[in-house]
Amino acid sequence: MPKNIDLTSNLEQYIIEHSTDLSNIQKEIINYNKSLGDKQRLQISISQAQFLQILIESLKIKNILEIGSFTGFSALSMSQALPKDGLLISLDKDKEISKIAKSFYVKARETKIKQIIKPALESLKELKKSNNYFDLVFIDADKENYINYYNSAKEMIKKGDLIIIDNVLWHGEVADYNNKDKFTNLIREFNKHVKNDKNTEQIILPIGDGFTICRKI
Image 1: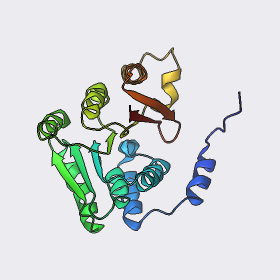
Image 2: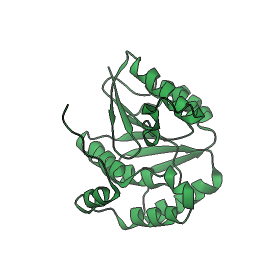
Image 3: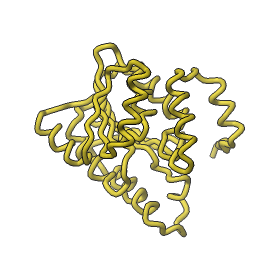
Image 4: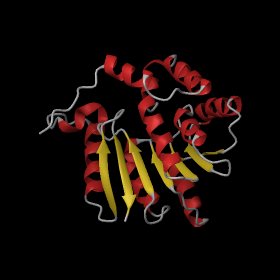
């Protein structure tokens, strides 16, 4: 097999330095997240944000559903790639964190993001009842409900549209079968569920903590 490159911190920094620059507010969110200590791991990586932006622009995506927003880095990144008449609905149940995310959206003068602050499964039921459809669903929330979120997302996209899920490599631990940690097993079960789904085609990309890209067929 061809040799894969080991992504060291130095190489990751090189990649960032030779990719499209982030906006000032994106950088501000990253710096804020660093102040949160271990919680900053809840943010997607810079490369993941840049990948999403290029994908959204290239595919001319207009409507996005985000499940899990944290402090708003992913939502702001994706919204910046949307056309003027685009919309991103962001679901999160944490009121305080959502206020912080909102403050960054306001500072960026970003009006294409609509926040819904309540448990995501409740919001998904309401959105489905209203016959909402999206070009892209991005999932980055509690791992216990990943399968539920994925199954709901499939009902809210049409043929050819996408679901993208973060953390599917779980720090590389999914491939260590001696690791029986609860969350590692949850991600393994989720990855198996997606692999066995005949309604989508999938690929896992090793950027950030692992992206699964699913296309409805």
